[in-house]
Image (cartoon, rainbow, N blue to C red; front, top):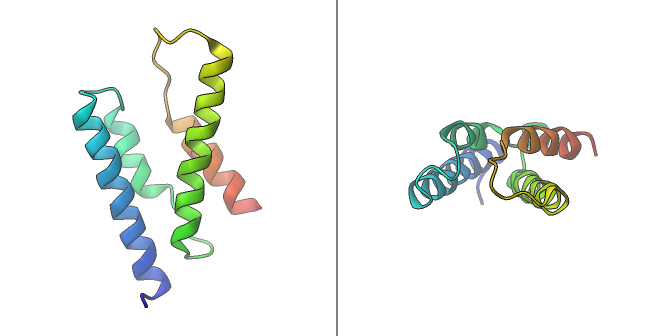
Amino acid sequence: MLSGKVAVVLASLFAFLLYAGLYRLTKGGVGYGDVRLAAVAIDFQTLAPIGSLSIHCMAWVIAGLVLLVKKSPSRSLPFAPFLLSATIIVNHL
């Protein structure tokens, strides 16, 4: 079993690689700022990788709901505010 800090670092690396892959596959559909921020938006308080997964899932759900309500897919939508608000929500629950 991995210690808490090692698991969080691995979760952070995984998130970075996942978003970097999305950045390359979508040819800029996901901004590079989101790629860099994805590695930082992890749950440092509990040192549990499941917190990182919760943050990213919650951010995608919130962004998806905003896009459904917005009904204007032609404009870009920055992902950083959703990632940061999900980090705050998960860290304070």
